Each structure stands twice: as C-alpha cells, then as structure tokens.
Length: 185
Image (cartoon, rainbow, N blue to C red; front, side, top):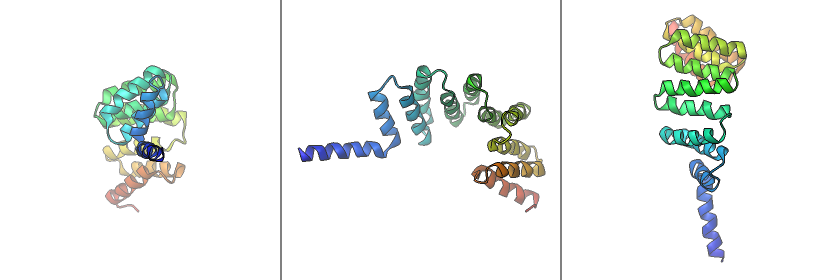
C-alpha cells in the first residue's frame, strides 16, 4: 500500500511541476470549465505553443463568452503566430465587452506592427484617454515614434512610461537604445 501511494504521489508531483500538464489534467477532468481551458491555453502560450493555445482559448471563449481576458490572451496567441488580423478581431471583441486602456494599447501595438501607424496612434490615444496611467500605452507610442525616426519624442514617451511604472522592463530596454541612437544620456 505504501509503494502504491508513493507511486501515485510521484505521478501527481510530476503533473504539478509542469503548468501545461497540470491544466491539461484539470481540463480533461472538468471539460466544461472555461477557466481550466483558459489556464491551459495560457500555459501553452507561455511555453511558446501558440497554435495549441488557440484551440484552448476557443474552448474557453465558448464557455465564457463575456470574459475579456480570454479574448485579450487569445489575441496574443494569434499575434505570436503572425496572425495580426485575427488578433485584431479578438481584441475588438474584448473592447466590445469592456473598453480599457489595456485593450486599446494592444490594438495599437498590433496595428503598429502591421505598419498602420495612423490607426495605431488613434487606438493608443484612446487608451491614454481611458487611463493616462497605463504605462504600456507610452511604450507603444514610443515604439511608433522610433519607427518614424522621432527619437526625442520616443525618449520622452519611454520616460513617461517609466514615471508611471519604474519597473517597466520594455521601456527600460528601449530607452537605452534610443539614448544611444540619439546621443542623449
């Protein structure tokens, strides 16, 4: 009996050590749980298994059709696979559930990556109007400014992001590059 319990405990501990294995187990045992499918999708996305994550996000959305986080994260999985238009569809659905700076900053980020600067700027301005303290809005605006060669404006935007969140690693990394390019310390 002790050996049997030891083997079962060891098996369970291997599942708990791997997030995607854990959430796959939960989703299999609770197939109607949208949260289980969401967590499995997120674990797969974190492991770089974006294509696998898409199916799990679809299942989560089917079970939780008004969960904004599902659509936000589903969009990131599409973005990971270079499916910008699909990402925008998911982000627009997230915005229809609730308009937030986070949603509009992500829309701006995706549009910016597609080279649609005017639309990206419009989405980012909307994000800034919804919540002027959301730091990633300034990072994405800064990225647009860098892409357009406006380095001083970019530097100011990254500093703005850091004033709102000094731990913003994206702003920290990019501001160093901007400072080197522009010769400003």
